[in-house]
Amino acid sequence: MSGTTGSTGPSPAAEPGAFPYRLVATDLDGTLLRSDGTVSARTRDALAAVTEAGAAHIVVTGRAVPWTRHILDELGYEGLAVCGQGAQVYDAGQHRLLTSVTLDRQLAGLALAKIEAEVGPLLLAASRDGLDGEVLVGPGYRRLEGSLPVVPIKDAADLWSAPLNKVYIQHPTLSDDELAALAVKVAGGLVGVTMAGAGIVELLPLGLSKATGLSLAARRLGVRAAGTIAFGDMPNDVPMFAWAARSVAMANAHDELKAIADEVTSSNDEDGIAVVLERLLADS
Image (tube, rainbow, N blue to C red; front, side, top):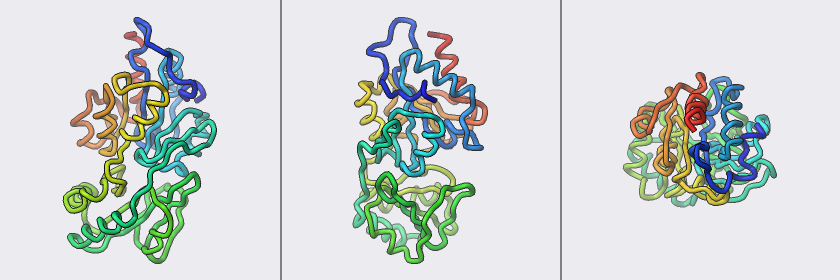
């Protein structure tokens, strides 16, 4: 996907009749990636066409760098990527971490205590900081089918032994929406809370979001929010949608995201990104 990297940045200014956005920001899972983990030829071609027209493409994902870089390498993606819900800006071409924000472990522990005081014991996992940061999984935490390798731990206290980007929480009976809402209510003043997918409720550094990381990466590329179109599928994309000039939810998106999107396109398995980009290219 060398044509979609954005590695050299967008053109200095859009010419009359050119593609109307200078930055195309796409989530990965459920958005750019199909259900089988691949990117269709049609979507690759559409992204290549918009970069040829002067825009940059940037991946913005909840996955931390260790869970993202193999995908980017397989795609031939060499531009910037925003990873870890905005905590990390990663240069895929140079395999270099440019910025990284870590979670205050004392605040996270206090937040967990407040949540557990309301709902009982939680099932826990955590993502360690760095290019090779491991994902630690505590007892009982339910891994998603097809998940990448993790490091099982016997004692949840081991989660706190090194710097973290995020903590994952699950509850034996509460739904993801219920757990996320309760976590915001009782601990939202200590940590950020987001839902990134089925079974994936996360505790983050307070104030951190995909919009945080995207704004940093966009600044490096010389692009502003007014020149950005964003694609996503889950509530963790809400801040990115609020930041970008135009937001597009996939047909398979969470209802919360669809409710605030400027447009709903086809699903990730039906080339939803390409549908929109092809239309914009035809109109430009």
